[in-house]
Length: 482
Image (cartoon, rainbow, N blue to C red):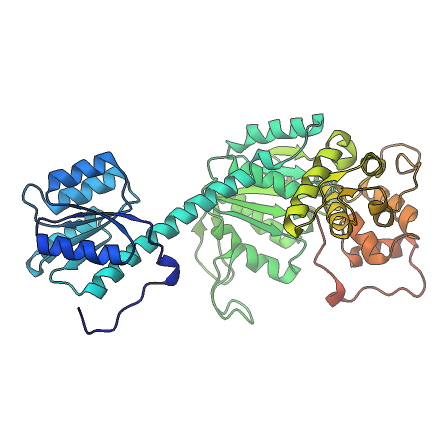
């Protein structure tokens, strides 16, 4: 054994479940390798010829193949090629002598992961094995993670059986496989980001990055740098270069949430990226090609914003190749109980709660509420009910304090029954509930920040004389439902 200190592989790499095939006609070397691997906890299969090794590769799957370069009936290079052809994820280590280093380099070109020069140090040999297998585990875990993400954010993640949801799912299925820009419209809390994720993970870019940015949550003076990147020293505080979110999402999808909040000067640069498929970082004289699919969302009517001049019309038409409207929860009555039960089960598992059901009064209470905060409001209400419940079955008493809805009220008495704009709707809700809820709770119900609510009430003349605007550090950056 070597007297040199042992080089330890990362702790997470030591999982002795891998299957290793060893091919070496030298009994002394083969037996030594087998002993080292078995002591380390690996399952080891020993063969003495290339033919035997190839037969093993055809009959079962191995995590690693360790082969000598010179075999009685084959070259180790042939084993390397056959191993990689059988399974590209199989790690291959070549054992060779000092005089065969050039062949070892050729083996690396063919796909071998490492080579060991004989005679080898036992600890160095095990380190090479453990490092190569650790790299394999990391790749396999990444593949599994991407598969789980694809499943989690597929159309199956959008829960509902209403006609509106069925139409939504049909539209997602049609546009997912395309490369078209998509504009997702809907009120706050309806699940616009979930729709964007379903489009991305349901299409050809599912294995590539999905990058989401809330344009309303980034200060106007920083959003240009965040999107387009910058070179070192491009502005005060730019201590290092940044490639920006557009280039980060290259090959995948960039989701621009609340794009109506994007400053007009930044809209000009984004339009150029959409037209030329090139992005130039701040302070740089070089442009970079980007293969990024753009999905955008807004809770405002962008067409009206474009007509009023608050949003660039040319950018609106460039983004609006396909428009998807996400229905509000009040138009999805058939989905309310289904969603509520889903959230109940989710939070019961999360918090280890004994809650397992809902009584009829509880469900009726849910149907009588208008859900101005849409699905996120329902999610928050169910989470609170599960946390505070005193019994196994949720009852109307678990909701009365949260929703404060009159027992016989079947809907919000909004205006004259004529269609309302979003702003008119928010004002009606504020008028109805402001005496029952505090500022923070009312803002959460509406899915907007406290400052945004305060500004609206001031503009409507509804603020109280002693009220002050919430300070910046008291605010959440736009408590919006994705």
